View 1 (cartoon, rainbow, N blue to C red):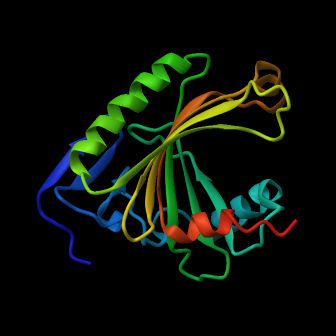
View 2: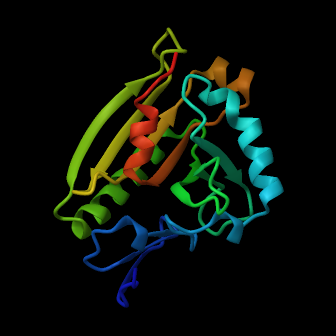
Length: 198
C-alpha cells in the first residue's frame, strides 16, 4: 500500500503516523511497520531462538504465532516485541510493541499513557476507544494490574497503550519491571489470544 506523504511525528513514541490514516500498516514504531518482514531487522536464527525461548508463556494457545524480542539500542524504547506466524518463511509482522520501563513509577507511566491517548485521539477520530483494568490470574493478591486503552479500527485491527504494575515480590522473583507498552496489532492477534486450547 502506498504510504501517505504527510507525517505527524509523535516523539514520545518513536511512532510516526501518516495524517488522516486509518490503516495500521501506515504506522511505524522505530521505523518498523505491520506487514514488514522481521528478517529485515534480524536474522532467521535469532527469530527461531526467540520463539523457542518465549514459547512457554503461550502454552495455553496453539503454535500459530511466536513472540520475538529485540533489544537494539532503539531511540525511544527500551526494547521491542513482535508476533509473527511460525510457519511464515518471511516472518511477516502481525504485532509490534514498544516497551519503556517505568519501574516503581506507575504515576509517571499513567501520565505518559494519557498524553499518548490524547495525541492518538486527535488523529484517529473515527476509532472506537475502550478503557479497562486487567488483573492477572497468576497473581491471586490482585496487586499486579494493567491499565489499558484500546483504539479499535473498523477493520478489527487495534492499537493498545498499557501501563502495567507488578507485585513487588513477583518483580524480584522474575526480574520483571513495571512499564508502558504501545502496541499495534492486526486483528488476527486478538483472535489467537481468544482461543485457548487448554
